[in-house]
Amino acid sequence: MTDSNRTSASTGYAANVEHGTPVGHPTPAGEPPNSEQPDLFPGARPPVAPASGDAALLQAVGRLILAWGHLERTTADKVSAMRESFGDVRTVGGRTRPTIQKLLAELRALVAMRDRHDQDALAVIATIDGTLQRTAQFRQLIIDGAQRATGKILDCRDIKNCPIEIGLREIEREATSLDRICAQIVEL
Image (cartoon, rainbow, N blue to C red; front, side, top):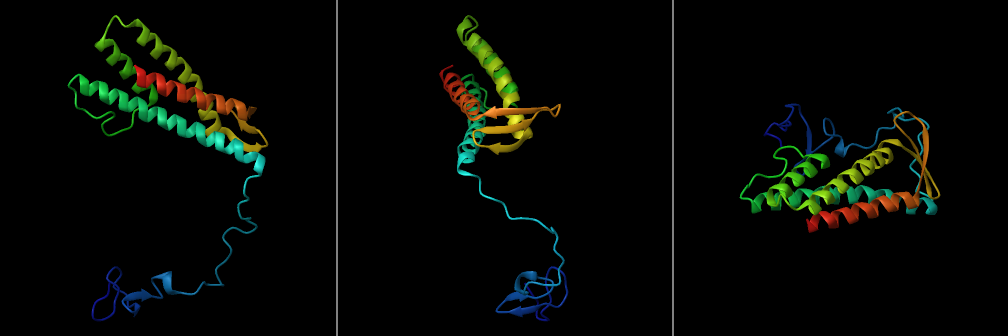
């Protein structure tokens, strides 16, 4: 945007305009690359694509993370549907997204309100809660501590900086466990 004096609307400085688009200073879009600029990251190498053996491991890590997000969404939807059936129209979490532990606590309370004598559903929620605490620690170890993927092993470091090797099968087992828990929550 320029006025009749060909000054930039944002800075007030004169700017060259070609076909209605500012070029040159202060807009670097039209300038040729400056060869005088120093290399900001000397010795940096472009990223390398993962080895074919690492691809399955990285896919399993991605699946675990997506399964956790699906679990959170499924639990929030279930809590929302149960609230609505009780006549409560509040959204889950309001302004902030609640943790999975808070969602499970609310789900437990809603199930107890629906039928105080349904001990089976409360036992399922208690089992889910215990499993999710362990899975949450596992997920956090992978997210925060992953160092390197080699073949079918993910090298991690825990909170005490101790090396831990996690196999592809373990990650797949946890992702499958999260899928099973999603199905259990839907059935409550």
